[in-house]
Image 1: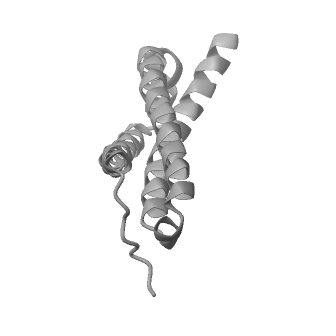
Image 2 (image 1 turned 135 degrees about the vertical axis):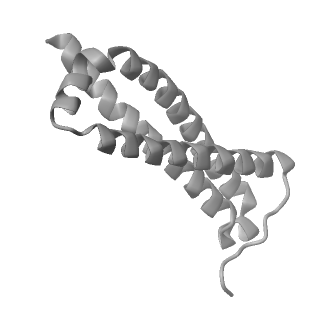
Length: 127
């Protein structure tokens, strides 16, 4: 019983960490492209760096939680999902989550590169 609850919690947190990873990448990119970056880069860079750290922690949990989910999938999810014919929806969900992770990796890489370069990023905000 306790194992089933822990597996269920892992599954929820696995999906949540995937979303946090993607959102942290987008938020860091937006922050670095904001007008605030032009006016106060010393204040904005630590915020973007913090978002990158949150994203990396979320990515690690996505991988770790995904391994746990993969190991326990047949025992705790497969029969119920297959019984209700949810397999195509689960496949679609994982395709969407994979796209979010791939996009997050690309954006995190770009943000990390911008943070390491030390250059000031020109705002795309309207004037």
